[in-house]
Image (cartoon, rainbow, N blue to C red):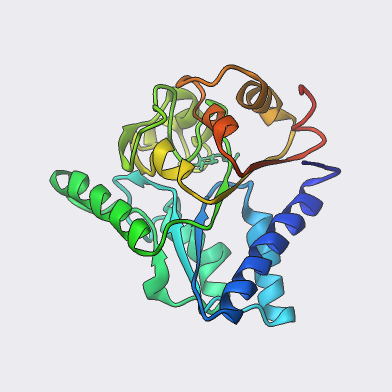
Length: 244
Ligand code: GLP
């Protein structure tokens, strides 16, 4: 779906999310969202906050699982995805804190494998992800599934690609301060979501968007695995669609 600009695209995606939240609420059921960080989904979160403030959209029945977090990372650090989600969404709506799940960058390295297994289990216990929001990195990553991440990969500790670390350099005031690792849901975890929206805006994303959508399905571009998903929508602005 190609929109004229990122704002129209984000309003559409937020509307789809809000519809499902309300539908589930009317049925007395939870709505499970998979959420992403980065600059791309910010306007979706802004629109959800607007719907909460102006149109009474409640998040009481919403359960969330975030894709990823740097490792190690303190939750109150400037670059933490916990802090990002609080600032952009969770502190601005009526979500129950116990319904929020974000990979924990503070755990002991020896505990990471067990932690990742529990994270997967929590998604399953919640009934699976209804709607997964994704951005895309210049390496083709979804979450932090860098080149080499297979279709069956699950939540785990990964090593960040040099391109990803370079792109994050300004957030960390220098490439050398960007953590070299992260915890991320796997490609397999993501593909189990019932509905997926991958968002990409701006001409900088045009080459990787074209490779992911029209290129071969391969481990070298994790987003290419979405081609096989029954219900994945790619949401672009004109600039990101330029090379299609
Ligand atoms: C980070 C995140 C990804 C995100 C990507 C793109 O690497 N872990 O989930 O999609 O950045 O970021 P942006 O949306 O700022 O371009």
